Length: 328
Length: 209
Image (cartoon, rainbow over all chains, first blue to last red; front, side, top):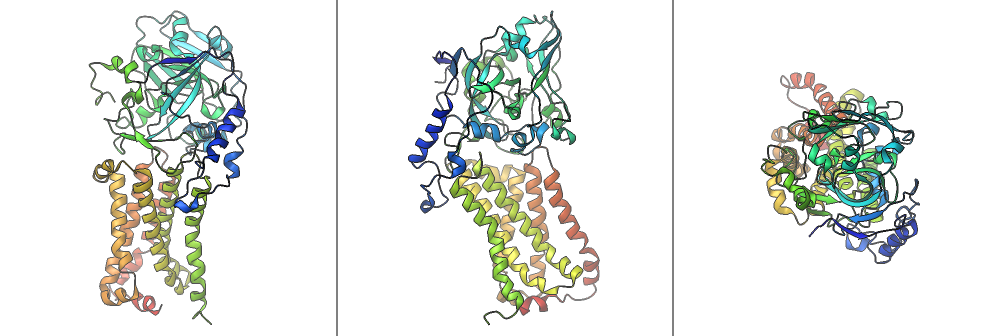
């Protein structure tokens, strides 16, 4: 079963670049690299674009421990996880965030804590991270568009941060807001969504140990296109709940307005828990196309979608007694 | 001379040109250069070309009228058949590569998902047009041929809708295709009104080839 278990405590940085590269070459040697449309098309000569994996950019992060919460499933390559993104502030194409986020300046950064808590105010990124041990969490990431990845994130439980500000009993939800910088985020020029991007969680969801306040991936700081410098990862929910480049966290009493829910309430619910039994009105959520492994497979990418993205054991109790068809 | 005239000479070139996006797709598929989600790329690109060629087919007649280059009509069948070809490639990729192993899901999808329903309907409607695209069928059907092939307007619209409905939020690109379709329909309006009074003369030109 998929359990939240610790694999091995690691001293510092994880899987170094050479290992990534060797892994690719190994797979290439096995002939898994390029699969043609017809059987005769397999090219043993490895394509240059796929072999020359550049070293992962960004500063290495020191992590205290590593947890595999993806049941050992094969990881998405760093290149794929950073070049296939939905981050409309940089454009609506999947390649747009990688192409258009170069001008974004993620540091220095400040985060506003507001609303129903004993302590509120504006904090620097260093204030926020101070005192929290970073850990690597390998999670499945299921997009509402029916594709998925397996990504090693780096962060710490959001709940650990929230507790520091002593939320009041009246605080039932947590609302998040993304930064809005038109000069650095060209996608903001087009009102495809109601900017700035907003997301929200119920307090118990926010406090759940799987909910990760994320600052890095693949052993390094988050790249801009993946939500630098601070984002949310909620592995049992559709990917859009994982708000990026967070500038504000607010404790509120009522269910907050969230961007996709406001854009199409019948298509994107507030909860948006991964649920193969509740289809998107326009497409099925029963299966998903997994983007992982060698990074190039024509066949066999489609897999069954699991309730709560495979995290039912840990989170299903949060919704006991709720009609998940109504509260989708 | 192998070729009757310059149009006949240009046809193999046009054929090669229409095949180029497919060749590009096969090249990328066999070289692993389709990006992180290769199957989605194959679907999007084959679908794009089906739609583009469908609209190009519908653009031939207005182009003839505006430019006076009446021989353009002799490329129309090829464009239409290539639209059918790319639509078939698109559907095959969806069925065999994308849904492979999950076909039970598909049967429900065609009925339940409007965007798949209209896409599939567009492909089905293309079949009779492809089958009756030969000169023999043209002669045999006579006046009815043109009536049947007016389905192309509807097919193109279904194709645009198919694209419109699968997009999550950014409708700029499908809107552009819709705008092109509307323009192609509008330029026909005055002619259609006149055609109602006088019998069509297209058949003579079509049969020359």
